[in-house]
Image (cartoon, rainbow, N blue to C red; front, side, top):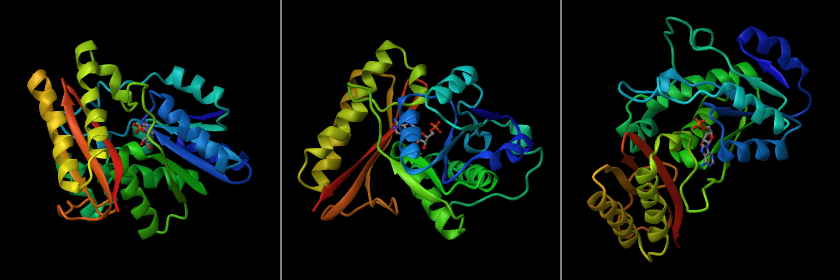
Length: 279
Ligand code: AMP
């Protein structure tokens, strides 16, 4: 496995990769969710690259950039065991530089829902993903549906800026009890880990509802129940949105809808989502 720790090393080794090449961008602290992305990439491509970069541009003031886990040696072992061909793990000084002037705007999609809670977040994601795509030139890049709005922003960027990479979405990987895997789950203590199950319970309750109004009410009621039971649980948003625009849906909506939620559990902010259909 090639490990490129700088742009220069990447440029030197990228030509060694043969055939169709896929990129799986990550911030490291790799778990089974990331592993499933690599496996999906492998199904579609002859060579697989993984980038590991904790992107400072996508963290807001007061968020967990400093505390974000960075087990780089474990991550390299994981990539090696998955047969990854190249890992790109640059430093921030190398990838971002000291005084960047130009970035990508996620437009309206970057300002609603998750983008409203985290101003500038999707601009920061897109700026770095654009750089990663320009540097690695993948025919295909794989992103998880766990971050559904991020996936939509990246698909829009690839289309609108003609990046020439096919953006593939991968299913959400969950623990057996329903909690979506996340590098941030390591922050949860035992009590918080238990109350974090309210997110997947809310999605399950919404999935059993017969119309948008009752789906949203059922999901919100699960989160309100958790807030009442545990003072460390605090809802950021629970919304039913149109799956490509992420704008709210009318109560009489028919057809596909995305239930998206963000909940603080202690000092950890968790997100989850599920596609529903009110055909
Ligand atoms: P991150 O390292 O959190 O930036 O995530 C890197 C990629 O892995 C993103 O495309 C995420 O959507 C994806 N991902 C993270 N957690 C999961 C999960 N539980 N299931 C599927 N994909 C995931």
